[in-house]
Length: 382
Image (tube, rainbow, N blue to C red):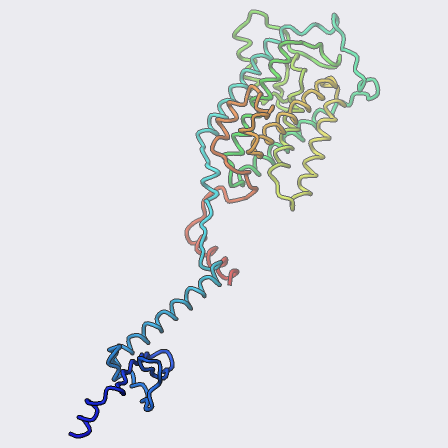
């Protein structure tokens, strides 16, 4: 009682202590209001008995669990950033969508080629009636004929080589994966080149290149006989081997040169590099067949030269525009000024990339064979 009264009566010593205690920072010595430290500072109470923060042991455990979860999230995010190349999945655009088959366009190109071939046969029948007689108009001078004598069997070599090349190209085309796109290109070029040929031989009719040539008699106004000749020429393919090549006048330019050159160009364009020996053999067949045309004196040299240039340039122009997609919309693309550019845009509109050289079976394999093939492929991947 005396001690309490003594404290209450004394006004000189009245210390007021303020202490800030936290659970994370180290304890600091308590200070009094007037800036003088107390003489007896007690250690800070434990977190469980902190009256100012009000934290209980349960809340501390929740805080530690939140810290652990935050640390786990940071670890996962850093791991994802470190291996972002493995997490990011890019799905490339399907090549099949960029190379649609569109067989109906191939059918249109096929009908175009058939129509032009029939039309060319009609023009040959018309021109045959205008060919001057050999006694009136002898063969024109030709430099190649001046140096090389005629070999009778050479033209047979030409037609045999042509049949081999056409057969090889047909088999190769059957086994190509994108045969629809390649087929309509082939049919369009055949039709266009033979239409050029019909125009040139109708405009200028040359005399026969040699006196050895035997031409069928002229029919003049016999329309029925002309129709039978047209059908005979079509059925025999216009070949001397089949006995259907009896009319004259189809000289400028050479149709045999067109088929020999065009077959080789398609074989070379759509053959992989590992087939270079096959391509070289086809080149020899094509080149020897063209030379034998001249050796047989069946065409003038100008017929072969014009046929070669017309075939190669048209083929290269078409495939340059087909394989270089920036040219299609380029304002300075002079190749787009050709008359057949609208037809080209129709045929190649949906072909958005260069056609790869891929072979496939023309007939779908049975399901059992496909399953075995997948098993073999899976074993190779492992």
